[in-house]
Length: 270
Image 1 (cartoon, rainbow, N blue to C red):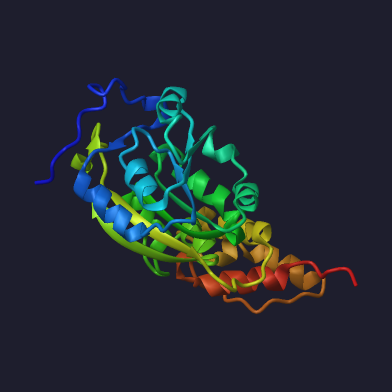
Image 2 (image 1 turned 45 degrees about the vertical axis):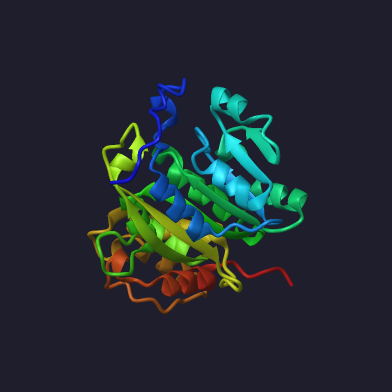
């Protein structure tokens, strides 16, 4: 069994439920995650939710400089003053990551043990800055990783799968048991690598999101009950779209959702 780090309470900080805090406390898992990230000096590395710094310190030792985003003011105060560490005390959902990449002069490498209660909103927030991100390595609830990486046809395939796979290459790396955290969560975790596609399909992200949300709103029914009216309206305005509505939402590959959004996009002004 792996050696355990001191309990956060002993370290002077009690995990706060309102922030969804579960601190990574297993050195073997930290080592595996750092090896997966493989940070190099000069890279613009950003850690979201550094907590007690279990991952922060080895990243900083490899990189020499690191930006961390921490909402908890007590934890942010602990981190300030470390050489090479830039502490942003803020909610990660309010951080402009594209602007941060512009400040750093290069695409960001974003990492973190994300609080479960904001993981999905944060993934969508980062999606808006994907063209300024080199890669992402996140510790997430295992169920969320399964949904992100799911292939069509399975129960895990859904809105999250489509909206992230159209923009990223997704690679689940390894599972992490509850005992690796302090306090232990009630669920298993997993680490995922997400690399933005170099040449993603040109599509209106808002329209794609609208169509995918509509399609999965009644996932047990055939798509004619959800998307049928939308396609009928398009046909009446002279934009017939070839799309098989005799399927359920989870049977449609990502590429077909993207093609549907492209076909339904309003024409650009000449």
